[in-house]
Image 1 (tube, one colour):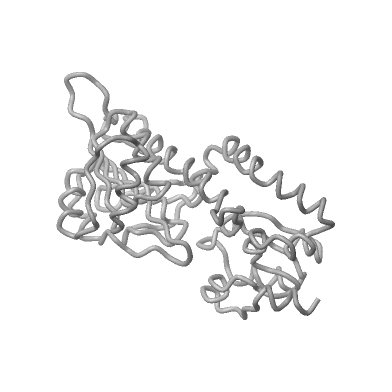
Image 2: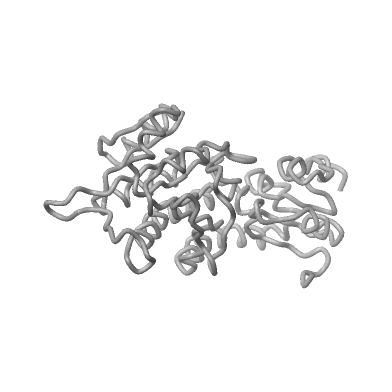
Length: 293
């Protein structure tokens, strides 16, 4: 309500926490809105998504360590790295950027790690990036169930380009997990991949179901807000300078296709097909809008 008509909004969309009223209000006020999740660079990559995924992957293991400790009534365990003691077992579901950085952190802290993903090329790339051989598997129910039964920590790091992630871990699987095990569902931003997951907040970040601790806070990077803000600033500052040099948003999105991809609302219309479909609102192609102006 504080945003004036025809202003520019550049922010995260956080689809899982929004309602159709938010987008309807943007359209009524003819706000030009850019979503962090949709902005691309000149190589066609999603730089803000990549940066936030690196932070989320790293932070998810640090959070898991907190909830394994006695401070949060956990099992009183460290992740590993102590001579003469067996490491804790960490399962990472998803071999994208979040999964890669979760693995890096877990291995650095001495944990035993196994990674699941249905893309063999992603699993191979992850191993090459961390320069270390680790246990990997496609997401087969029996193999996943066996790993979950041994797991002290599970990081759900599945990511999809658009829409919701599939539900991978059933409630029955959760019931078979260790008492006091910790689940960090980073995928909750896109619906969550655990059947038992429910959105939580930083004020009340966890709940316990079937004796398993669930941490399901969307936008985990906001937990380390200063680091996240500096990372976003490094990416957004050049974009804002381009907008200023080009003479405004409209001129910029006409000229730069990579930035045009980041626009999800413009001139009273929703211009992102995924948002339009998920919230059952009318969609209008941005290129068609621009061609009539």
